[in-house]
Image (cartoon, rainbow, N blue to C red):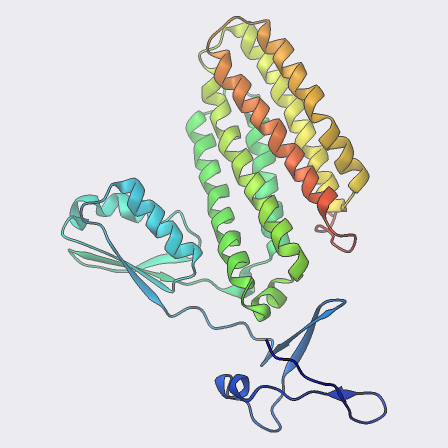
Length: 323
């Protein structure tokens, strides 16, 4: 931390001395231009320019030998979220798992395989920041999730199709997660993505809740299959109610409507009780999984509402257009 005194410079401005080490590190000298970004009423951020930092050129090598596929997938995910520019998968066992590794890499937006040999596979980060709009990407996740929940009501829905759409939502989640994580330390990135500093945590919470909701919604068609016909009909009515409940939460988010968000949050317990009453009328062990799914979904939707309730007065969601 550096403490500086303000020095009056003219009738309407003041100056401060900048640390020499910072100037050298950013290649700045007399006459160069810097940018001041007002992140809050009490915070100014000084940057060399509004251009975001270049895409990371760092490379990480992940050995695949002696590891379970789940472990390899977790390491790839961590490398992607930490913004490595190049991910190298290497090992003697790579030829036997290459197909599965390629499938893992395809789970991430802008991560493209550029080279593969017998014992090495290289994936490069080809993300174009100009193509990313955080609010629009959240809306895409939302629209896909609405469809996923709604389709669970259809008795003819293909459960495999639901899982594939859940993967699409996961891809968008990981994309936004890595951008938000990078924006914490890259103020120019945050400016380019139009994310106020105070909204980073709220944005992360929203995409996290949507991703978790999608995971559950994708499992609903399969959870309904073992149930008797009458039980399936009642459960589909509950899913419809959950769909409507979710829409209200997202309406509150887009409009930054704290009163509506409070109403949504306060309805959770009544909704859960309704689920329990209907589910208890069907003495079927297969109802247990469905009951747990619905209870968790109700809590996650209420958590979306709480993001709105907890937001600072100046924080707003995205445009209400297209609700």
